[in-house]
Image (cartoon, rainbow, N blue to C red):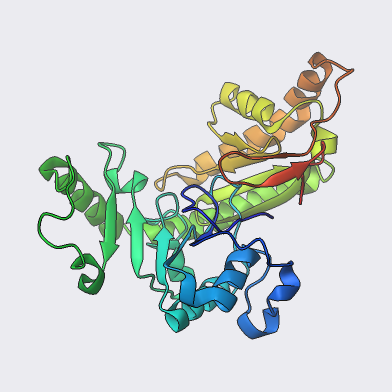
Length: 310
């Protein structure tokens, strides 16, 4: 997995907001037993551990969305919180994709009982009615802005504010966070059964709550891609989003029913059994597997048709 420290990274890379740390020589620069931070953005952890006094902020997604629903190892967020507190680094959680009950908790950081200094929200906050975003922080941070120092054309929009409040009320009153957790567990169990049916095609099923991903084996998939499978799912009434050629992201509505989850799982099974072979035959046979490349949005590096993470 790749995650660079350097510029402020907004999509699916965790990153320390600082100058580049090209002198770090690899995971050995960080002792996992000391900080319990490894693999998931080890370079940022190195920067925080070794250069905390020169870092202003640590901006991260608690679950990396665009990278393909990549979940950090247990203890990563707590260790990052401890390092940020130790070095007085602002811990900024990008919960735009993961927040508001999506992962089975109101915030994905709640899985480790971590309280960031700043939380960025959007997407679900508007409940599909109107675009709404928000930044949450304690007054010690917010009041750093003095009157006249910061402006916003649509900040504090009354309609957007009313929609955001109504959205949160519905989610809390209907217990949608708990429901997302329960339905997500059921969904993954069904997806694992599909994986057991197609072990050569499905590499991994992962997720939390109703934010899930199915990673496919690039070699078994070639010359087709996750995009082709998503088109086949669309024809079967299921909307899903591909990423990195081999990953299918599944993020159904929080109000999805058990019958609809079963329908989605069956659609994936049928697509792999009946539609994928046809798609593979229709693709040009004499095509080389894709060369090593790096995603321009999340920085994730892949190599060849098996989409091996570097």
